[in-house]
Length: 164
View 1 (tube, rainbow, N blue to C red):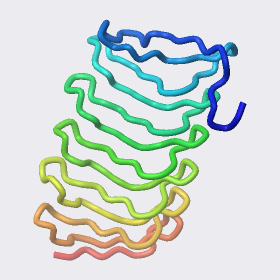
View 2 (view 1 turned 45 degrees about the horizontal axis):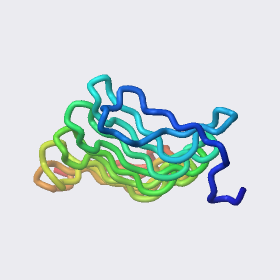
View 3 (view 1 turned 120 degrees about the vertical axis):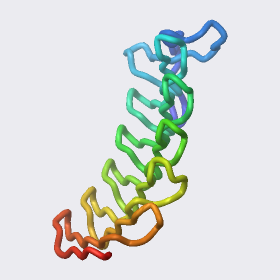
View 4 (view 1 turned 90 degrees about the horizontal axis):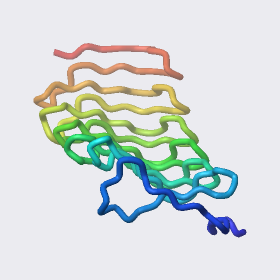
């Protein structure tokens, strides 16, 4: 079996609570390991989770949906069960909540957090390094005015400044 191929003799399972119109099947190998795209549904039949497995580990795209509205509330990717690459979350009202990146399961790089009822208006932004806040973090009000700046080194505050 090559890296990108599925094993032979996969068992196809209908996702629990999936509506009759859904043709997708979750797949298990003969050892009970998950393979391919898996879907999960709420009791009311709404798609709430879609993820990709390889050899029983999350590998590939991951999408979470609101069980009431069906709107996407989280999207990202995994490599060998660890978050890796861009991740975005949305509030239940559909407005972007947070966006940033993971590397080997840890937050890394610039992360931006948004106000719930102000589309596209950043509430705070800053850098993560190996899962810890690092460097300058800037806090804004809803008018996009800088309210404070906090500096971190390896997750520890080294300086902070309130602006009025």
